[in-house]
Image (cartoon, rainbow, N blue to C red; front, top):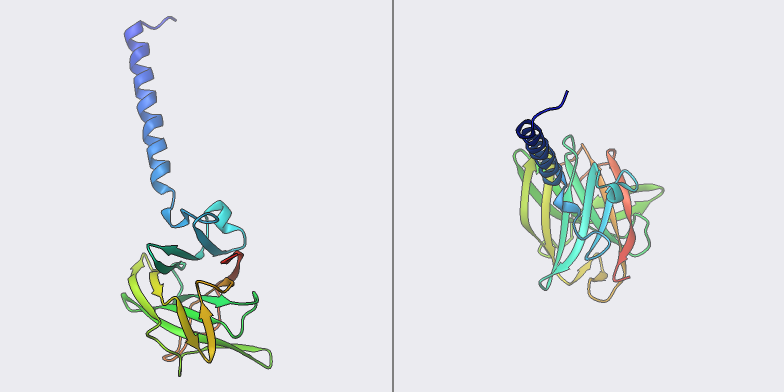
Length: 200
C-alpha cells in the first residue's frame, strides 16, 4: 500500500516531535551537580566510580570560583547528614570536616575534626572553630540533604593549618542516617575518597 505524500509528511513530523520531546526530557534529567568534575572541580562520590556515570547516592565537590572556596554536597533521601573533609593522606583521621546535617526541614552546617583512637574514628566539634565555614545554600530535596558551603582560604583546626591555596588535599566523603546532638555518627550509608586532589 502506498500512502499519500501528505500522510507520510504527517507521520514524519509527528515522529520528529516525539524524538525532540524525548531528547529534551533526557537533557533535563542530566544533573548539573556533576558539571566541572575533573576540570574545574574536585569531586567524590559513593558508590565508587559513580561520578563518571553521574549516578551517585552521595556526592561532594570542591571548586575555587570567583575568589571563593566552595564545597557542595548532596546525600541520599534516607540520610541524616553528609560531610566532606580535607585530608592530607587519603585516610580518615586528623582531617578538617564540614558537615551538613538535617534538622527537620532545615539544614545546619558544622565544622569538625576527625580523630582516630585505638581503631575507632570520630568527628568532634568541641573546640573546633565554626566561623571558618559559611552556609551559602542549604535545603532538603525529597528527603536528601543538599548544601553549598564557603570556607576560609586559610584556617587552623586543632592546631593544624589548612591552606586551600598552597596545600594539597584529598576530599573525603561520608554520609549516614544517625546523628547525636554534638556530632555525626558512623557513616553507614557510604564513604569515598576523591581520585584527584585539591592543588594537584
